[in-house]
Image (cartoon, rainbow, N blue to C red; front, side):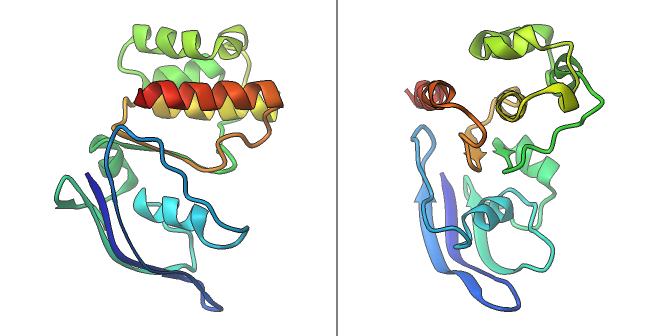
Length: 178
């Protein structure tokens, strides 16, 4: 169980999230919705340990009863939370295959995500700068899935994807929790 308790997020100019408390069980597809600028991305980044500069925050984030607020993003990932940030943050000089192999403990894990994302398998020799926005999104998602998370936070899951690819993403997300 992931528990958020009295989360407050604010910029110096305004409050974004005020007194948010929630319990997020594993194995369910959950969406955080709201208008642009309402703090959705900031909330995901905060939970995953990557608080944006200039953001003030307080509250508690517990995973399986353990406080994870203040842990490094790497420590949070090791506890079962993976994060695909908006903007994808790709390494332009690394190929798809090099990127995934850096994350994957075993080659068969990379092959598994290639089966999930056949377009990535076709482009595995291409660098990040040679990928379309949708391919970069797929690579970012594959990178997160290689960590075999219990919780997967995806910010703007279908950003830069065409309609068919959007459907595929939603189908894959649903399959992960089924």
